[in-house]
Length: 114
Image (tube, rainbow, N blue to C red):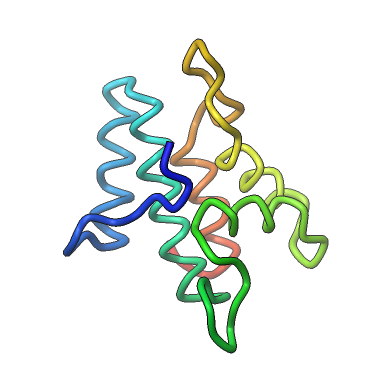
């Protein structure tokens, strides 16, 4: 698994969340989770800062989700959604995030993104 969840050139937040919704609709929860993580990471990069620099919160999307999951500065619901999204898939390809689009939307709403 690529912990950086690197974006493909030209992919936008809207592309990632649309792909997450489409994948979840067809039952591809693994793909939905990956796209929801990317979309959330893009939001976190904009809102709280990722990577080196003065607004550094975490160096990668996945590490930002893991940090957000334990950061008491955020409401419990946001931390729980981040924890579910950051959860690693089990060998049977399941994870705590059974509805990754909803988990991402909880975080989006907190930051004022619909």
